[in-house]
Structures are given as C-alpha cells and as structure tokens.
Amino acid sequence: MIFFYRLFQFIKYQLNSSTKYYLHSPFVYQFYLNVLEGAAEKETSQINLWRAKLRKDVREIEVEDFGTVKSAKRKIADLEKNVAVKEKYGLLLFRLVKYFHPKNILELGTNIGISSSYMARANPSAKIISLEGSENLIEEAKKNHVSLNISNTEFVCGNFDETLPTSIQELLAIDLVLFDGNHTKDATLKYFELCLPHADENSIFIFDDIYYSVEMTQAWSVIKQHSQITLTLDVYQFGICFFRKEKLAKENFVLRY
Ligand SMILES: C[S@@+](CC[C@H](N)C(=O)[O-])C[C@H]1O[C@@H](n2cnc3c(N)ncnc32)[C@H](O)[C@@H]1O
Image (cartoon, rainbow, N blue to C red; front, side, top):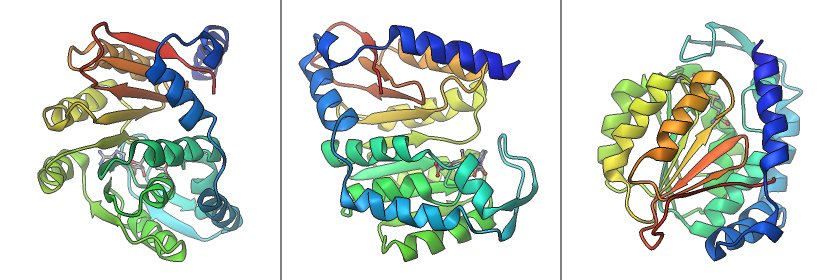
C-alpha cells in the first residue's frame, strides 16, 4: 500500500515540478542554478568513493529501536544503501551548504554519518551538531568522519526529546536544520516547533522524506502553512523552508531535480 502511495506522489511530483525556465522568482532561479544544477565537486566524489567501500562492508552492528528503525543487527552495507541519504541528495546538501554558508547546523538523525559528511565538507568552518539515539551508529559515524578527515561535527547520543533542547541551547542560533529521524507527523511537528524560536531570517529548515507516508506529507502541509515560513521548495525527497522577510507573499515551488 505504502509503495503505491509513494509511487502516486512521485508521479504527481514529476507532473507538477518546474524546471528553471518557468521560475519567476530570482531567488528560486539562483537556487536552481547553484544548488540543483551546480557542478559535482571533488569533495563529494571522495565521500562517494568512501560510500562505495561501505557498501561492501558486511560487518553487523546492533541498532537500537529509534523512530522507524527496528532494533536489530544491521549490516553497514545495508545502512549505507537503504538508510543513508542517496548520493544525489547528498550532493544537493553539499551544494546548498556551499551556497548559503550556514555556520550553525543541526541534524536530527546521524545514522552512520553520511548526510553530515556532505554538509561538513561543504563548509569546514561550520559547527555541526548531529543527534542520534543509537550509540553504535554514532561510533560508526565517528569512524567515517575520521576516514574522511572531517573534524567539524559533534555527535550527541540520546533520544531527540532530550538531546534537541540542550543542543539548541549550545548552538544559540540555528542556520540550518536537517530533520531526518522519527518520521511521524507528531514528532516532526514537535521538533519543528522546538527549533522555530531559534530561526532567523536566514535560517533554512530541511525535512527529509516528505512523501514517506501520509503522515509525513500531512506534517509537510502544516509546516508549509506556518506563518513564519515565507518560501518552501519541494524537491520530492526534501521539503526546504526559508524564512526570508523580503518575500511578501508566501510561495511554494515544486522543483524538478
Ligand atoms: C534516516 S536515519 C538518518 C540518516 C542520515 N541523516 C543520513 O542520511 O546519513 C534516521 C536516524 O534517526 C535515528 N532516530 C530516529 N528517531 C530518533 C529519536 N527519537 N531519537 C534519537 N534518534 C532517533 C535513527 O536511529 C536513525 O539512525
């Protein structure tokens, strides 16, 4: 059933999404050119080479039951292939961070540290706090970041319910949040509300898996309508929110990627 829901949403996205030729907003046009169409860079090819190694890693680790991940032994190769951000969207994260230069980045959902590696590489002077409930996953993420010579990520272990409020206090300002854990409507909206008071005009919130389930799409609809958010971009895998005050009318763009 969920397969058909996602397929239906994907077909709808394909039919509704715009290319750069139909964009009337200069800001969104520049986003398209620099983030969706930007070149693949050397730094991301290093990460992708490392991922190719992980895809062959048959070691098993015990992953605690957090969010939608079942408590079980899982192969590193399986986590890389089925849980971590796909290379295409990792590249999007990389180019987005490179283009907007967020200094304080918060990630909900480390897993084995793949999405955070793209963001960390894109701006080595950024401070990244990545939250994860499973200690074993954090250990793997740390090893991966060491192998990739990444040193600007701090991993925090525990349930988001406890670690999110304290991490927000530590960062003071939040320039970018990647919400990529606990894909339920209530949790997504709760974490969104917790981060909102710390967003400013230049903050960017990215929600992963907005068509993962009916609940996640409902959460995305609520988020899009929030009065503080002025512009939303839908690239199917991610819903991206901006708080830019110069925008007078709220707009949502579905962008082909
Ligand atoms: C989809 S994975 C993150 C993938 C990662 N961002 C990437 O692309 O490389 C989501 C992670 O969130 C963690 N998680 C889910 N709910 C959580 C919670 N309430 N507290 C802490 N961690 C949680 C899971 O253990 C899982 O590793």
